[in-house]
Image 1 (cartoon, rainbow, N blue to C red):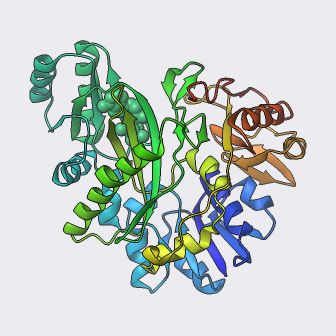
Image 2 (image 1 turned 180 degrees about the vertical axis):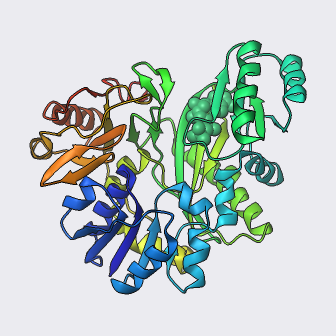
Image 3 (image 1 turned 120 degrees about the vertical axis):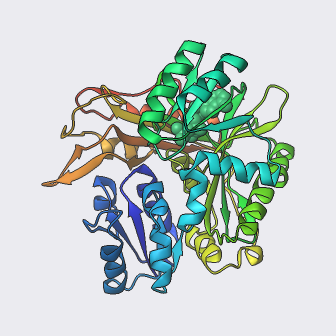
Length: 418
Ligand SMILES: Nc1ncnc2c1ncn2[C@@H]1O[C@H](COP(=O)(O)OP(=O)(O)O)[C@@H](O)[C@H]1O
Ligand SMILES: [Mg+2]
């Protein structure tokens, strides 16, 4: 079969790479893809934007695509799945109504309340004055979140009342609605689950590293590295997450009449008491989490995605995983997440791969037989090892081979591994 992957990040390179490991997949088409998918064997980029639904539907017909997999949240929240399903195209991802679990944090909170899912206490606001009164009454630290999609820039964890009030002004101006919630402490974990709308199955848990600086300092980013599995998520905790979070949330979505076939990603805080609480839900594969979860998967990915689309996930045998660990270290452009330069030549990808790493490309493009930087997060140097320590060692040894002007990466990915 041929599969079309929508998007152009490290996640999409990882999706394409994993799909092509399957004996059932002969070709992957990426719209628009990046330098990584452009150079991946049996993969073809088409320069069609992620929100050009008509263009994507046309490519599906032209290339005889059996399955479309949507990577990013933006086309999902714009209704790409509704558009393609109406045209009888098999597509993995939630409809616009399902994607609202990510695109509206206040609505996600309503679903969590309905499902009795543990999460931070919160309130929704549309005017600054009421929000300020609330902040003053509960005090800091406190978390202020824009309601809508904000590409990772809509959340401010305020340590003082003044900071929280400034955050209200800033976020209300951009989004018109916000939620203010209780500050949680503990360890963050991402549990991505696949669902066909009837059954839900968690994938191997992962831990991201959001901050730009080592020891988790500095600004939030799209994610600077990840590892999977996470020993903190024991079998017992995993079962609780399934029973107390994933299944009730799916049920609440069903009760809203939502037919959700895709990834439900739970961003969790594991409190010091060991309780899992939801920080947010995403409606798609996480990035960089996908870059460590998929290389550990033994079950062919297309079989899982098709089972979701065709609503027969319950009949699929248990997912098979490699033993061992995967680690991904992101190489970013200097300056990211603020301003950075593009168009720098990248050297050493082959050498890094010869050292046993998988080099997933994110913000890159192929230009006249050369791979150039084209975004803030440029590469995800990923390694699978028999142990976590081995995976870390391979990833960082491979990173030594990679070179581009003003390259930056964190040297402490996995520092919280326990
Ligand atoms: N209630 C909370 N308590 C503590 N930290 C939080 C809380 N909510 C969010 N954060 C921090 O802010 C980050 C971003 O928040 P999140 O809700 O995931 O929004 P988004 O991913 O849409 O930017 C989280 O990964 C977490 O580090
Ligand atoms: Mg998040």
